[in-house]
Length: 288
Image (cartoon, rainbow, N blue to C red; front, top):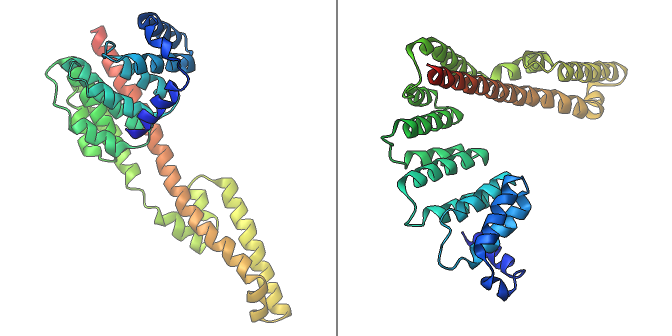
């Protein structure tokens, strides 16, 4: 939170003391207008000026609007700080507080911190309103899935009111695909590359890397044998050996890291398809 006050102090250095006599309403509306047309930097500057001189806390939603500006600028740390400032206001209604807590969880996901997002969600009281309950369970389910807790994720998704019996089979297929992807054994490509360099990369679908690994290790192995024939094995190991083992071991490690990256790409693809499916389920429910 200290960085928030440092930021506000920095803004105050550029504000004359006479600004306190200006019409804060006009400045606030101007900031909103700039945000609406996509001038985020200008909007943020004016929002911060308004916030600094709003001594009586007239503009309750102002901290959340500042936070949204920071989100647009990919500054998630400051966004979370200003949402904390918003939530610390006792005048915030339960409905707005609930929405802000969900937004904080979303920002934590954007900040690649799904664990904190999950903790934030689990600290929220389960809403009674159907719409709010759907919003909560959808975000909770997705966050569980990002945290690789597939069982809990689908348990939350199944609580969505617009999930019908006709959707269950497709959901089960998504669940099986995610579980299968999560159970990928990354040691298999590693072992394959240890036996035959490049084969692990082939399994990962990295054909260019596979060809590179085969050519390099194969060429160096041929050179090592040739030097051993011409001189001695010790000479071959001393001169060519370091290069051979460098690329040989590097290929093994690359095969494993490639497998991990392949799993992440597949997970991202499956989650994207899953989100589209949930969106279609919701749209079908609205049409009905």
